[in-house]
Image 1 (cartoon, rainbow, N blue to C red):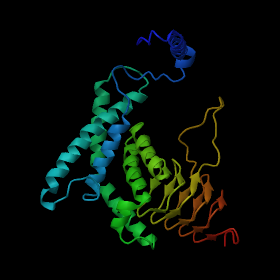
Image 2 (cartoon, rainbow, N blue to C red; image 1 turned 45 degrees about the vertical axis):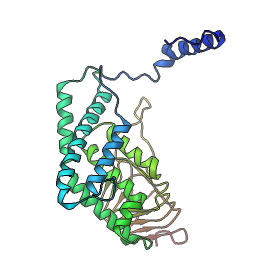
Image 3 (cartoon, helix red, strand yellow; image 1 turned 30 degrees about the vertical axis):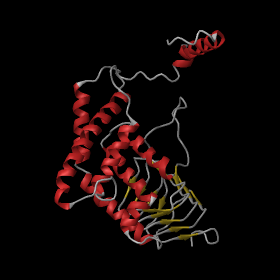
Length: 303
């Protein structure tokens, strides 16, 4: 322990007592994480760098400081993606080590698993770009204030949130621990849109304004759906085991079929289905299935 200023013996004694209390097992065991020996924790800074590089790769010319030229794009893209792969592989390995039950040093199977997961993710980038291009088109077509899909890419919080979600969802599908949730929470902190990486979201999805939107882990959202600010797609209840702990992994969030619109402040809870083409008005509270094509408002429920 570093020595404290000898001219302040009272401060020395006080801080020494604080250190002793913080190192006491009763205090320390509640927060201590016994990660695998020699394994570093996942890095938020590295994941931010990865996301910035992926944004440049998916939307060349929109992000980053370098001017994009078509004749040199292949060279810069290859160098960028090589860096993404190396950094992502390391963060995936750290995620595996963080959750490893055996708590041992980094092992060959985990290293190989991390490599395979990183490569499998990289292979999804063209599809992620296609989906995000559709999300940008949906934003332009769904918002009269939008001047172009390009404006939506550059300015709209919905596109920032979906960039993170499409990436996090692919990693989640590959059973990568920790990293998808960290990526989702970056977007949540920046945009106020909270999408669990497990949520399955179809093509041409748009959240107008966005602040306060919550989309739960087991949500299934169809094609061409629209949400407005303050919408919650959540769970109605949390079943528990006999010992009182929550049962994990059950389907407990709503299903939105294609072409559903949900206006500001609506709350939809539980494993209910909102039928194709339905419109849910603002500030509605929904805990039952909604028929296809229904128009629900406070004045005319299930009209």
